[in-house]
Image 1 (tube, rainbow, N blue to C red):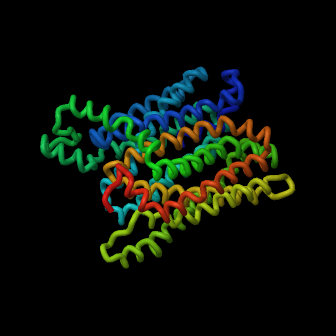
Image 2 (image 1 turned 90 degrees about the vertical axis):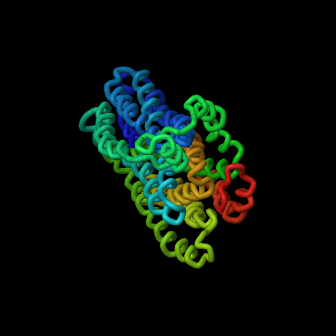
Length: 423
């Protein structure tokens, strides 16, 4: 929510600081750049020193920079505070999936991970909806205060969680069984050197050298970028096409929210009535990670369909309900791909390398999430709604082959991975 709640306040910021509309988008993009960069350090750090110490460091720092965002009196200070708020928000997002993988075997991860992957998307879509009403009744400064009001109650219980990473727990028990913060038994200097030389660059290396990680992260990241493109462009499209005011523009996100809320139902159905019966029939009670991709194969067809429907129905002669429904189909398809792809990554790389795979995903995901809002206004000006959404739909058609390809040839690719875990 913190990444997008600011978006409805862009006009107020542009007026208050006398900057262009494009410049007022920078706090959105810089927050996402921070979200992409943070896991490059936090994910391998959690695989070296444990998950809990990362949470203990980043959550208070996130709160401090949100305070700075709220008190900003210039665009430069707003951009800087939003950037570092993103940096310190990202580790909690990036390593949460690995924390779940620490605690649960593959057969029990589906429901927690469905919730985990749905929550940030719902938050990102709720941000403009909440922000629109906050900005219209208060001011853009209140987008920071609302973020704090939501973040603090969620963060406090996390600070009291115990360490979950098995490797570090074993090391802690050997050195000091009573310690609540995992401190590996090896000398600190050795751990730091190994962290820098072996772990620090792992997310980037996996993104560049692991075909499974590369293609899935590209697909997932494009969808995340698409979400942020809608965050910036959807209010404008409904304002220019249907004359929506600022509060009605916030309501334009209802279709996206509905699609996001319904997608987990499909995935829960697949888990209960397809995956688990298949698992029960398996002689060794084990299924390959590729069995997680059924939902992604369905979503890969719905995503481009929704974009093309939106492209050709967002016009004054057609009720605004129709493009809203189309946006719901887009988000339904997007999340139906995104969640199974995340499950597939976690089961492919496991708890040992899962945080780095998640970090690689975050790096590319937020790189696209930061760039899509910047080119969205220019693309809409030059191509219009129909042309812009058709181009995006074309890209999703090309990428739709990824889950189908991995379903067929994923086992062969996993065998060649140096980060593979045994099935």
